Image 1 (spheres, rainbow, N blue to C red):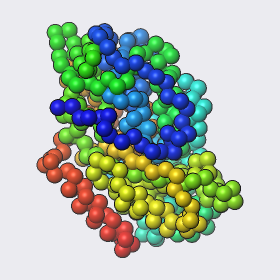
Image 2: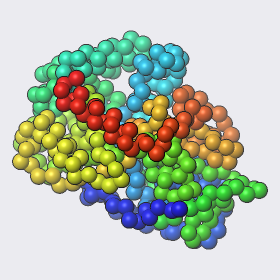
Image 3: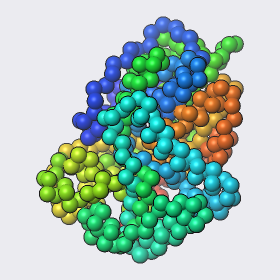
Image 4: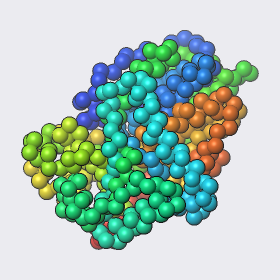
Amino acid sequence: MTRDWTALPSANSLWEATAEPARAFPVLSGEHQADVVIIGAGYTGLSAAHHIARSGLAPVVLEANSPGWGASGRNGGVITAKFRLSFREIDAVHGRAMARRMYEIAHESTDMVEELVSEFGITSANLTRTGQVKAAHNETTLKAAVDEADWMTREMGSAEVRILSKGAVRDETGSDVFVGGVLNPGSGGIHPLNYLRGLADGVARRGVPIFQQSPVIKLRRDKDGIVAETPQGAVRAKQAIIATNSYSDLTDATAHMQRTLIPFRSALIATEKLPRNLAGMLMPTGRTYTETKRMMRWFRMVDDHVIFGGRGAFGKQDSQAAFDALRKAMVGIFPDLADVPLAYKWSGLVAMTLDSVPHIGRIDDRTLVSMGYNGAGVAMSSLMGRYLAAFVRGEAPDVGLLDVSRMKAIPFYPLREPAVRMVAGWYQFLDAIGQ
């Protein structure tokens, strides 16, 4: 069965309101040949198409909606060199060599975003590398953040990490609610939809066919390779890449991948443009910010709009309760925003995995996959395109813990939504009592 993807709501986001016009791509019609058929025109799929084409092979990209319709156009535009699993945790479980390799991959991912922006001249992406501040809401979480930063400096050689006092975080954010924090200068921000559209335009200009409104409803093997069928056509290829992430259940062709993911809805709000005097007081450095609560909130200033996001929206549709909770949390941090109207609110799905890291590689001799970015996908998905191209060429790149052989199916999969609600509710309770 194919989901009615056209019935799903589009994001009413700041990104849509300020994006460059979208290039029009055709609908697939008839039969086409390719070396690689790529399912999904998000960051993963487009980066893979670019790197595969640069290898001298011929990719074709198929998108069920339009490029950027999924997570690539709905995220917060935060660029970070990290995984949900910390490097210290990786070191404790898997050893120092693995921790260092994962550290290298994480930093390679942020550099890849900068490389792609430069490669295709995507100035409208407004990429910054000014850093991210983790702002602590109490002394316990501050100590944990400082301990982690000290470990990173000592064991990973991450000399750029800086400890911030309460006053320094107040100057950074314009808020008095934090007791201190940690600055990671290597992180940054981007206009995620302009970045995506710039990638799509650049890849298409270099001769890669991209088809929109062309959902793959069947993916089947034949004697020569693999065939991706859409309602009006088909692509015959030697190999296929599934790059659908949390939206893998749009059709039955990729729905089996969804059983390895826990989709978690992330909601975002953005204010009207602030008066210049107020805009100058809040987040004047242009960095991105996260807090240390379990139900993490994050925030940034973009063109005098405050963007505020976080986990906690449930179900398959936007949730007014989640938007209301975000606004309450935002005003709690920035009381001066109490009377500022919201201009935009939107949400999208984050793909969580059991082991808190993405996975990439071959699931059989003709099919590759990359997904499960755990809320840090802008940079990592951009990098995974390079590694997918290496796998397509028959290479065996060292992807550390990201190797697809480590990917596990979600146990008791039908119970995933109530389980997520239960865990999130417990986290919300602990945050509320200051634990």
